[in-house]
Image (cartoon, rainbow, N blue to C red; front, side, top):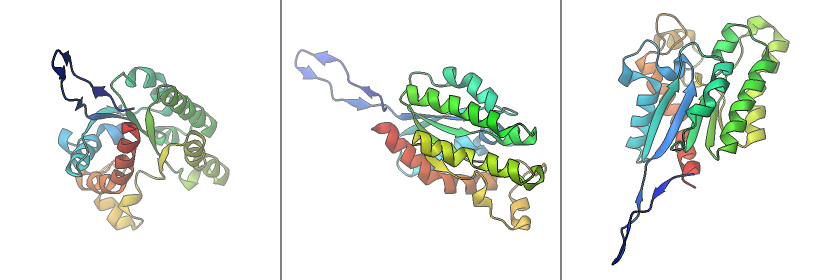
Length: 209
């Protein structure tokens, strides 16, 4: 819920109310942290600039840790949700996939994160991940179902994929990625922000109410 600074009461009446910016914490891994990019080109700074350009009074906190799994996010969610945080973006699960971790573990960790946010009264945007086909049909089906299931269970805002804005054409996709083929370059991040941005504006609106 958005915080309001009420001002001091004076003998002649109240000082006009001043509203603080909405504070959104972006909890994630290297995709959130901005791996391989100058600070200003990372996901969180670009998203903050985009939202402010749309008129949102918002401050984004970069709570991305390179290499973090969903278990790491669950371990630090308590101290990420400091009293000034009004909303939470969750982008975790990519490193679970890279390590081939059991989908049930990812579901359990994300559930803990969302439970903690719900208990704190913090609005959430959950960003999904999709498993590659090389783990088999059963693994992919089980993993891919985690995010829409939890978004429905916890009534969060939901974006199905972090990378959907980069398109499905392999040549175009590669042109928007860094040399490792895992992390987007600055232009790729810009396109991701454009796609995710509207959901973030909805998150800000929820956090204000």
